[in-house]
Length: 63
Image (cartoon, rainbow, N blue to C red; front, side, top):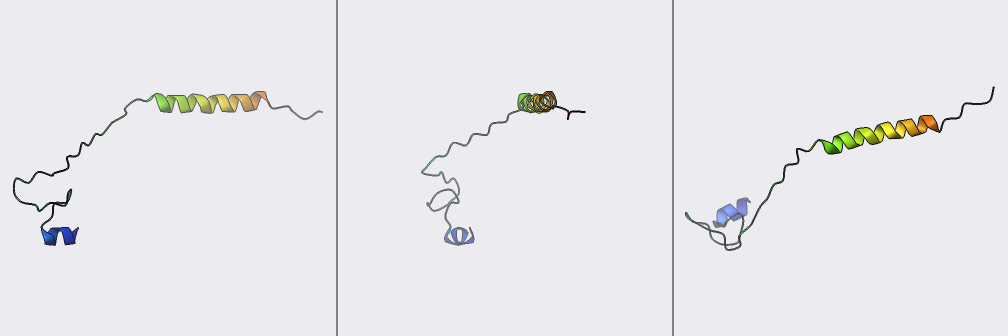
């Protein structure tokens, strides 16, 4: 990064940086936020199902 700064290059493209510079290759950045609690609820249900199935499959030793 320091080398690019010393050469006066843009950090996003290889063009010379100057006030008002616009990169020749445009980038579109998109951030998605997933606030859906469903995956955590699903994991909790799967954990419960796993524990119940293990308990149902348990056969006590003969007396």
